[in-house]
Image (cartoon, rainbow, N blue to C red; front, side, top):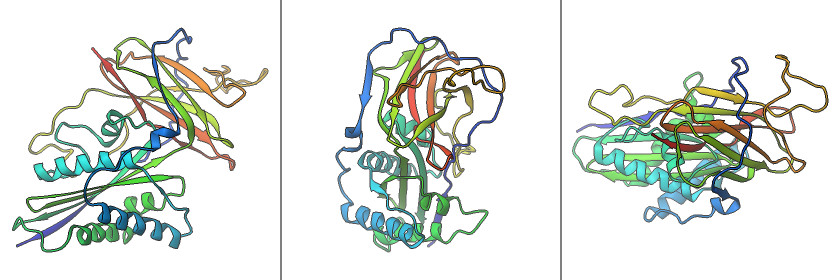
Length: 317
């Protein structure tokens, strides 16, 4: 009998440094929008495995505290997203971050209504006898400890766990037929509210997005990233067991500069920032059907920028 453990890598959203693209479309009257405020973080927890989830949550925060990192808050929506993925992965005995439908973590997060930045760690066991010889919590903690034992440069899971810019986490768990899955679904919450279209748009249409950062933060850059419709997994698919990254940048949008200040390319930006820090951008869904992800990079007090959204807007043919 064999028991195999798998740890699956997490993504990092890099700040795009490619040249300035064409400016966004002029903002015009928009369709119905969905306003997501603080209530987006108040959702029902998934059923089952409550004690195991809380034990893992406590371990995560204990490890962060031991390294001088602030604790994470609980994110129930992320836990439900992780639970569904873990169950699908265990039932299909699949490895990797893609579900059987071929959806990457950020797509599943967006389709579940998540708009804040998202990152995922996954641990997996495959037990050849089909019987668990240890409690689910013990196996999940073993996966977490293996992540914390990683050493550079192959320490992506550990760096995600200890990332001081992440603010929330939900934990997914599942066991079926000797397959055990544990998912750590992290988020970074930096916006008071976010507005996205209330329904999917049509490819080619103008898309609106609006948000207001929390106090002490300001918008520095908005990226629109595009991913075509998901393709279901097949045997031998290279995505099985692989780490993942976010889709490529389709367009970068910059806040308008004050007075006569201009960017190095001679332009003064693409969108206005209001007195309260809120802003709205508009862009065409011109890459065809799929998902258009809006990544908003906020500038912290120390001047560094990191993305605080991964809001996905579906575009239909």
